[in-house]
Length: 246
Image (cartoon, one colour):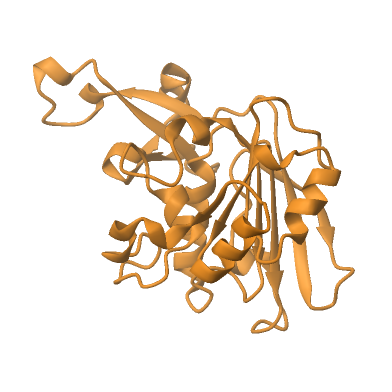
């Protein structure tokens, strides 16, 4: 199911007891190609002492505590979604070089999806988190039924733009797992000139802002594009997407 890692490929995952890491190792992903994010300092320390490399405690980046990027309130427990949503040099847990090398993402939610009591916020956070990984090829997510007996993926996450749901695993009655694969040939990342925005100064008009396509509305023939620099969503026609594609 999982293609083996190439030399520079990275896998991002959640893993409390190391079983996911060991399983991915058996599937051809060496431990040095895996990065685990952990919200519990004791668990992160135990994994490190057990010899697992690249275990990163999300609480070590203290500015995540100021304002949640997921729910907009004060954040007391930084999550992997915060790491994925925070772009640029201010992210000390995931560099832009590492972000560009992520080919596989596995989110194992033992207690349920992020912001699980607020489905719209969960869908918005997941949409942008996945969009920020422009070279991602495979994405899998496991959600617990502990709080959601009739768990339905559409409630908490849209199928990411440019991906197709290729497998649903229901063998474990306590969880549901979905596997998504990137669709070849879909335009995802754009380079948008600053002059696209009103009020742009003459000296900045040919500078570029990176945008990522979030979705396509076939009825209106419009793409929704997330512009990372301003953390805003704009709408574009097919002609604009073709003109600005990387």
